[in-house]
Length: 298
Image (cartoon, rainbow, N blue to C red; front, side, top):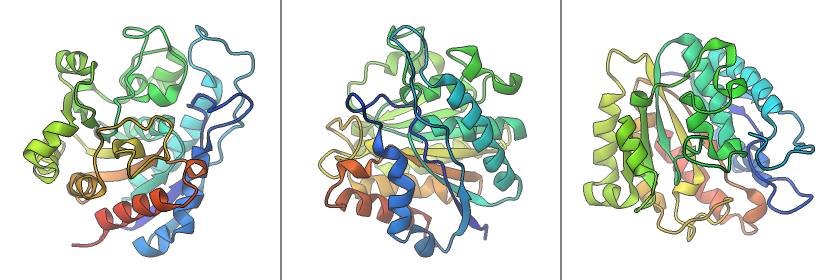
């Protein structure tokens, strides 16, 4: 069995401030899950912390591109070094965010090694880019577009490795029914499945079928991106965009388990849960339980 290694990536560089003069609280995600005994319950090794730069948008204004871009680029390289080390060492890596821009660290690391796919379990695709939006700014809502080579060069072409992930190697799960971006994904041949479709066909059945497409010889493996906002706000209100119509905990577990248990899956990152928005701690308990149950031995 592979060693499970937990690495903290407590970056909030990719989110807009929740209120003037404040910073997003998702940087506390890693500490909150550790406090719930995540490492002990997974019998995981502690891979330490990749410390992010300070959150500072300076004099950024709408239309200036991605804010904190230089800091995100620097952090992406730094996190990629840590991810690459553990993937090459054949550990199974659990990266605790942070906002969704941390996924760029994994994407860059895996692109250095070879060709990898991504199973993105997210309530939104995070595919905003200049070709489909005039509101570019928050990398946490754009990281998948950036990873597939869409957007400003200082984030999409680090180390001359653009794109980090090919369109055809991306699979999206958990989009809300009626998501307007689906037409673009279909045109790009990006696999995408809504909450309604997951319920119709069964999360576990779909996950098992799609996992097989990520286990093909053309790919060296795949990574799982888990955004807590895939869950319904009734059970996970502690996110920056709590959109109704999400999955419930048992459905997420059924979806997540086949991916992370695949021998070709090299790691998982967890993002967006904000302890500041979870005063009674129930959402954090639920998220920790899902991750532990998904990774527990059969």
